Amino acid sequence: MQVLVPLEGVYAGLVAGIACRRGAPAAELIALIEAALAEAGHPSSDLTLLATLEAKAGEAAILAAARHFRVPVRAFPANDLTRFAAQVPTPSAAVARHTGLESVAEAAVLACGELVLAKRKSAQATCALGRHTGERR
Image (cartoon, rainbow, N blue to C red):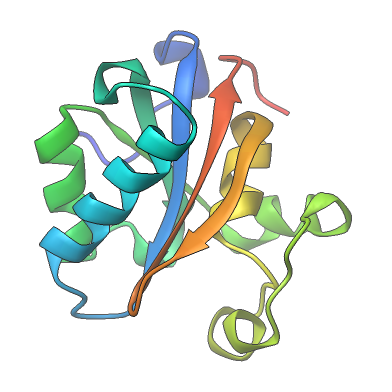
């Protein structure tokens, strides 16, 4: 599985912006993504990409989710995600303390396209959904 993919290599569809705590269970992240898709009224087959912070891309739960949904992971450096800070609808001080960013999930979606569903949280993970345009923003 390729962890870093160029945006041009992924066709339009849904992107799940995701983040999780170190060691988070894969089943929890997968269930959160499935719940977000269901809430937005989309089948999992509409998902074309997972997007996250570069520092999180190697997390076992994220890699397992990519395998589960059969989609690549696009990992963004932190400075790429900071460009979207003003557009993030639900910034988090807790996330900022851990990552230096007020958002990972929503900012990762915005780096790929338009936000469709603001972040949803579980005990150890977050997921936001967006419409992936296939263009670098």
